[in-house]
Image (cartoon, rainbow, N blue to C red; front, side, top):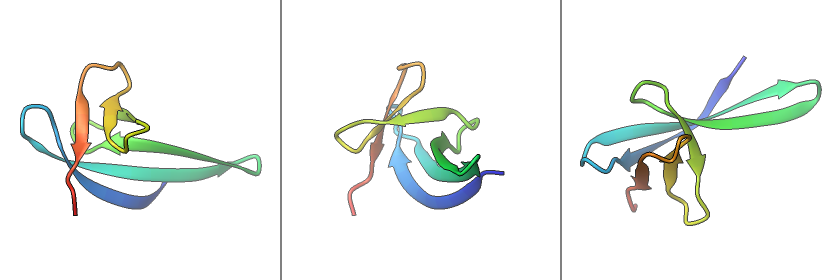
Length: 66
């Protein structure tokens, strides 16, 4: 079962606020993690610059600076 670890408030390309949730689970002794968007539970990929993009590469979702 997936467990919520962290929630980050982000900004979508259209200016909408999106909560991005980091989830983890243990399967056969290995930890898996994923990022989900609050908007329709889209799977996200964390980029090297710390922002996110949708799994299909259609939209960039930016972290809001602290």
